[in-house]
Image 1 (cartoon, helix red, strand yellow):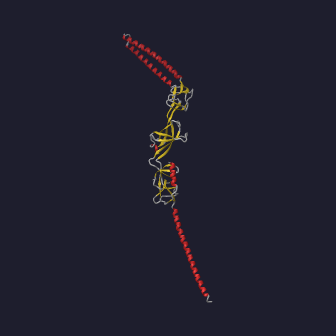
Image 2 (spheres, rainbow, N blue to C red):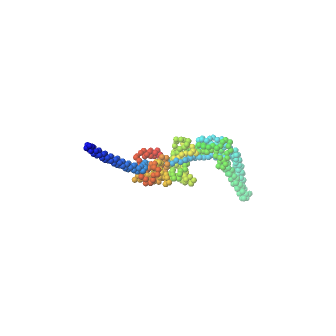
Image 3 (cartoon, rainbow, N blue to C red):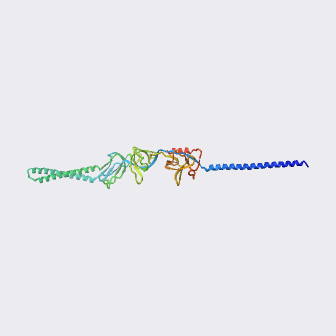
Length: 398
């Protein structure tokens, strides 16, 4: 029996060691788990804190153009335009030119048959002959009475009466002769001629039409336009009227000449603002020697208006519009948001030009997150191609 005692002692000692090892393992496992959980908690807190700060893309304003390209509607008119009226009444005998015909100064346009005028001229010519005959008789009588007066055969009163009759008869001759000359001048208006070189843009008569003297009930027979040079009329908004000065160049296009651009030069301004439209009428001159432009046509006119100061260009996605108006979000030196009110000069689509509210050194948040507010901390995203895209879009719009 004695040999069993050492075995029991060894067994108890082994169990004790095993228990100690097990407890140690359990302590290590529990401690490791607690440490890992704490580390995970700290990491999660750091991630959560970093995620609380939005990541933003930052860009800077691009310098805009020093000129503003302004497009306005205009209307082309002939440099000289003359409606041709009749100066005598009658019937149209014939016409020599039709619409679209180029004519020269003095060229015959039409003839009028004037039987009434012809009869009046014949009558006043006969009246002139009668008046001249009466004046000749009165002169002879006056001379005779002057001779009789010297012999005291007649009184001075009778001689004065004969002299007065001579003067009256001579005045009638002059009046009748003037009437003859007047009708002869009117006779020359039977032929209607062009007053200057130009183009016939309207013909409102035909052979056999009753012609009345123009200016009253008479209608215009022809319209003659000088189209070698055209006038272009544009209503310029009051904001830019002072900058459209004589000599400034403009470009124009017309629907009937697609792909072609013509040049016009400012000649004059009305120097007044129309209260109804708030604009100033500006007159430009356009060379039309080749006849490509038509009087009366609509034209798109483009001016390059100099700006008082150069604008700054920012992407349209950077704009914030809310109850406080139009603003952009910029970054302060501590990467906190600063909201700045701005004034838009031009909307170019994906890019807008800002005339007030920014400086070239400002850092602008592109596509700011919803709900971003003043003083919010943000993190700047790594450099991307957004700046290059803005520069490219800016180059496209210049």
